[in-house]
Image (tube, rainbow, N blue to C red; front, side):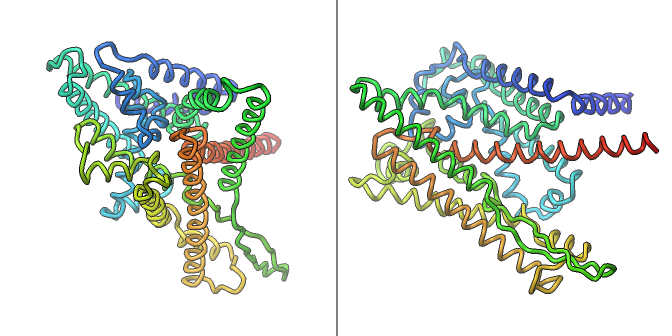
Length: 443
């Protein structure tokens, strides 16, 4: 019986993989509509005005963006994918404490699947913990219709189920092999916050202006956004080609090629990790009602992006340096667990390829490690400086943190480019498999 269920599950997954592209696109669209519908309608027994006030704080704009406004609405999907992101951060940190987890993550597809299942289990646990903590915290502050065990239990169950459903939806999208399900949901959440940003820009720079000024301002806003988008695309798609020479002994010739090391080697993970860590103390202080004055208040203002780069209070710009330090730290950390120079050097050695001027073995490993570190740090520095520059411009105009010109657009572009690469590789594999089947049929 158990074996039959497993076989049926494998058959279901294979059928999902074999769906036509148009069907997969329709399924993704339907899932996004469902998620947005569940994220837009608040629960009737929660005071949503308070949560809108909290999530309106500029230091929590990132959290509001990755949840697609669902936490601000206190909806069925209030937690959105934030428990999974937190679980991913915890699991990545645990690889340092438990070497077995690091080995599992590097142990091919099977190891990565096991690591992913553990991450999902941690995410489910965090969903329950966060739901209970949020329900109790809101109830204690009088923000539930009635602070009773039944109301707290109902809110906790609803929010926990909502988060677990999203984890299940992300796995469902993974089975279709259309990219990372979590990344697709993250993109949908970020895009859902863009209209409010557009309206904010319209109200400040277009509405109420004379026609000539309104048109000029609209053109400048569009040009600025396109420039930011272009820079993000360049940062996410640029790579350093490392030359490789493959000796062909039989032919007596040298085959010259290269392999790329992306400028954005660590993808958007350092940015997500750093932003999440800065957001956590702020939201905890808002729920607990602490940090209203004294040193804790100044610390919270340092962590708030809307307080950075203001000439009248330069002390709070220390938070920007902390943010830069965190992204740099996570770049080193993510390189250590996500980029394996030993594997690259070993593959080069097996194929008879060498890097010009570098001996095989340990020297090649060291060269790849130093080169990748230098490139990744350069990419992180450029990305972080772009984010900080956008914060400085937004704060100068009193706009606060805009998703359309902040951390979110960096994440969005990075995820989209990763998805494009993954889909291109899957298409290439499918095309190659089709050719092999045709050859077998001819033979």
